[in-house]
Amino acid sequence: MCGRFALKTPAAEIVKCFGLDEAVDLAPRYNISPGTDIPAIRHAPDGRRVMHLLRWGLVPNWAKDPTIGAKLSNARGETVAEKPSFRSAFQRRRCLVPADGFYEWKAVEGGKKQPYYFSMADGQPFALGGLWESWKGPDGQILRTCCLITTGPNEVMVPVHDRMPVIVAPADFEAWLTADADTALSLVRPYPADAMQSWPVDRRVSRSAEEGAGLIEAIG
Image (cartoon, rainbow, N blue to C red; front, top):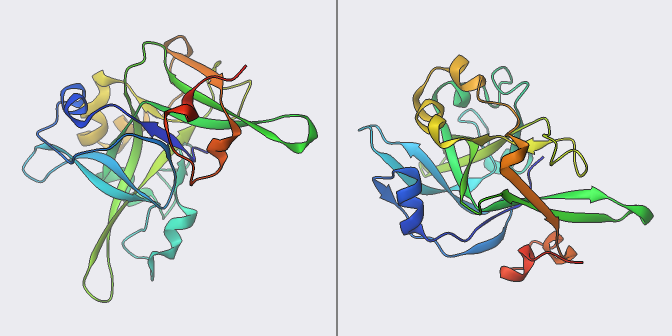
């Protein structure tokens, strides 16, 4: 599961890194959690690559109400192309979620969990693979939501957790956003471990109300 991530890179740099034609402005966030609005990159109907804010927690268009989104923040890569909650979105509505890093928790002695921060070894922002949906409420209002896809761990993740988010390489951005489902499914895989780094961080990040750059600093 991927339940928290950070994005501190300014929107202007995100525009360059991801080749965007349109982008919402962003403030640095170091403890982004499900149920909040997060930046998601999609292809607009006119072919432009755009970044808008979508609610994290997928609400399928057939859902009776939006509360299902609380259970659908992640989709397992092994079944994402088959499960009814994700199948249609995986075929037609994939997105990229920009991040500077994400968190995962390791079980330690005493039943406690130690959070770790994972990022690229070069410190650059990267793309998490996701899906998006539009849901129309009884009042006619449109709610646009998204989720992240997870896969098995690479060697950096193994000591901490048995899952990691799908990370899409820059060379595969266009394929992820526009190619057929079979091509996209081939990109659902662990990211190369030698391109990543990680370190333990303060347990404060476990509380969703906590914020600030101190959350991603390594602890001894």
